[in-house]
Amino acid sequence: MVIRKVNLKDIPKLWNFEKENRLYDRKILGSKFKIFFLWEMNNSEKEKWIKNIKREIRKKNVLVLVSENEKLTGYAKGIVSNFNNHKVGYIEEFFVTKKERGKGVSSELMRKMMNWFKDNKVEYIGLDVFAKNKEVIEIYKKFGFEPFSLHMKLADY
Image (cartoon, rainbow, N blue to C red; front, side):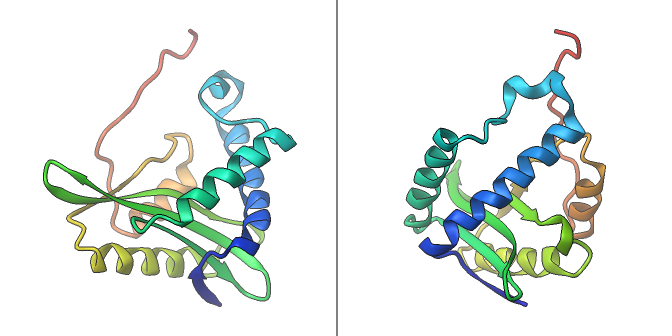
């Protein structure tokens, strides 16, 4: 398995991961939450997403990684920013395709992302995960993440 920076020719393939990720979110969250998330997977949404990711990968404070084992198996996106005169890291995206889960892909992606944060002298690393996504929460806990804040919504409103 190879973990490397994304390149422009990977981007159309990453859209397939994004679609798989959106379907997974829809499955675990249900329709009550759809107002908050990007459910659309049409050509217009694809073009917006591709334009955004192309812009992001040109920035020095953004790292997009892909895992590859003959084909792309996962990706991660991290960003470094400043908060109160401290460098903070944030994992914006982290996804491994269903067929490749349990094969160490997430561990390698996370290791590479953590090294990048360390190289950038980041003092704090955070991420967001849906509370209903128990499987992924457990994976993040294995990497040393712990709950920090809880965002709640009125269930039937």
